[in-house]
Image 1 (cartoon, rainbow, N blue to C red):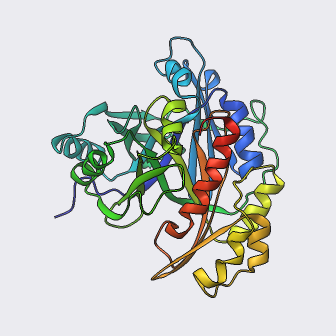
Image 2 (image 1 turned 180 degrees about the vertical axis):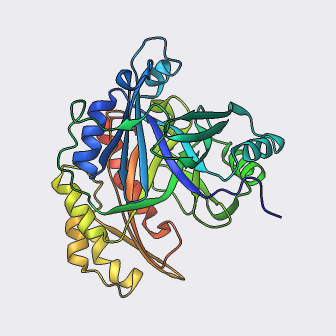
Image 3 (image 1 turned 90 degrees about the vertical axis):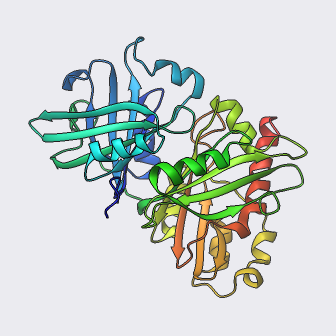
Length: 366
């Protein structure tokens, strides 16, 4: 029997930001996204402005309130820029919503069917960790992005010349939750959305001299949607998860991993666009051949760019992490290329977290 949720893929990520117009400029010029659609006063949206950005199969929606009584205005004061909604494509929104509530989910917004010249757009939302939500979306009978959105008007925001950097899809989205609550949210995804646990990491796997964390990765049955969930573990000092929870004001999305077919080309392009990446010591690369074996890439080139490598039973992966994309040490991005590996870079954890701790030390938050 077909699961009434029958999740297809991540449809889009909806992010609230302080200034959507300026953020769209940043993600276009730094990350290579094309700005395709707009909603705002000119399109009948009276409380918020929003820009749709696309690259490969990735869709980001950047939203800013334009009135003080917008229901989400307070979230920017509390969180700063961050992810509000992870939207999931389904075949039947009502069935998915009803099934989720029957399995214990809490409603954030009941199903809405909106019709306009673009067709029929159906959506509903359930609550997740913190004030993050999951939307169920059916756009099978809709042309365009969504109601109130129009193709970008050059008078509003010049489409200009954009230069994609080779980002192709969303690989996974990572959540940080409070200490002691990781298993609760793993159970939520298992019970409500039918996910299974792919892999678990404890403080023996993810620790440094100063801090530690615990993590479990949940995924849908098709492996298209993967959500690692982190919680802090007791360490000598405040972990990166503690820092996130403090500055974000609670649990939320820590980072978004974007897949590419050529990480070297993608990272070169992004670095040329002034994207800042975390770096590990050069000694990491001296030990790399012994640790991961033969790889196709030139290690000297990986060292130049700061790209990390790890191997599992099915292949290897290459990954690199940006620094936070706003002034708060909260949301950042991972760029990842998989060459068969299905894991998440366990062998890189220590080097990566020590790099994060160096940044924490600079900020005075370690």
